[in-house]
Image 1: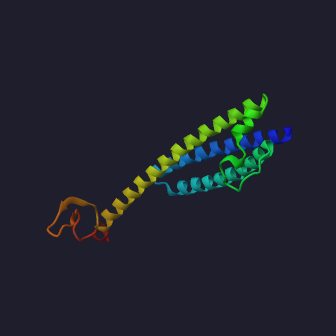
Image 2: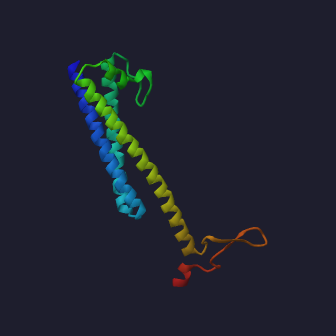
Image 3: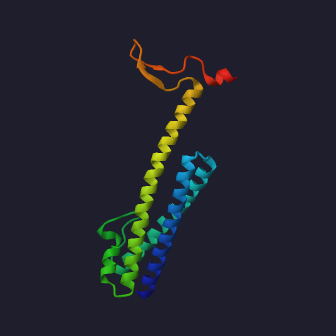
Length: 171
């Protein structure tokens, strides 16, 4: 049982390391999104994908170890709930120093995941704003730019630019 506990601590430390690396990559992606740096966006997205897959593998191993240590039967991949091997229940039943070490790891991991969630929401907002800006830029170049906010007699919003396009004027 002690070997499994040591392995569980190691797995949780690896999950925490991967979570921190994912948080770092997500922060870099936010900067890349704001600057429309496509190569950096692609690079960080690939890093995020690889780290997410790694975390999924580690979490599967964690789930199996917790289930083994608590005597529960592990549920299927990605399962949550009473049959997934409760880390909290395991911590409550442990003696020191294992109890404190697992508790600290669980708390730290929860904090990293919460911060990662915040960065992901920020990235989502920045992505939407960047796409909106890009659409408006394309609209200006193609002559279908944003309306000026006034309706004509037919009930449609008038365009700022006439029928000609900036691209055609330059060409």
